[in-house]
Length: 357
Image (cartoon, rainbow, N blue to C red):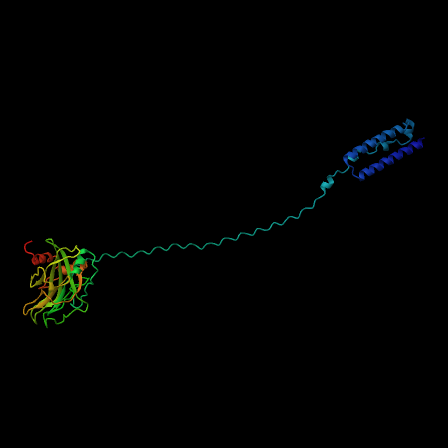
């Protein structure tokens, strides 16, 4: 009986040991572990029921079933490695993606130093104005004076002056010459030597007739003047310079067909008059005058039937200031400028051909 009991205990011990070994080797999930614990507990209870309770004597003589009692409790199952080891399995450390090296920024080119602004050149000091020199009349050779070109007429008076420009016939003596240029240089004239027309048969630059006009006692007066380098009836007679003029009197320059009312040519500081002029002494609207010396008397103008020459007309107001000043101030000795400021109205008054004003 004792042997049988001992064998049964050994068998139980081996079975339990085998079961524990299997449990240790194979990880059992927690729910299965609980079921196994329950089965083991039931088997132990059944084993205890089947195994007769040993007597005290037998227990002292025979090794106690301590080994069976010391059978590992379910605690070892609880200590069975949990899935944690799987989690603790070192995961492969990912190879770090190499971070591309950020290229060092290209340093900005060092700007060239800004040159200091070039200072503006110091302006030269303004020269002191030249001292005003007194006006001085300049004379040039009689054949060096360049005449004014006849400008296109613009005003009513200019148009009338061109319309009635006279023609001059030269019987003897000098031909007309320009007396002043645009710079104010005046002619020096000629000595009263040689033949009456010696050295004065015409300027290579062309000639000139000077005009000036105005209302005078309700009649429009146009004065035309010519300059001659000398007035010499014969060698040794006469004088340097000569001015002669004719005044054409018209009713009104601002009407479609102005009419010539009278003509007064100059003669020896006086005038002859044609009121109105003879038809054969007018060529359309151009009166005809003759320049002649009746020896031994000096030259003078008179109305004529002979056709003459035309010259470029320059009106007083069309000339340069310098030219007007020179004509106003120049000394032409025995001759005088009829249309200058100091003479013009006096000449008109003296030549008035219509009786009492």
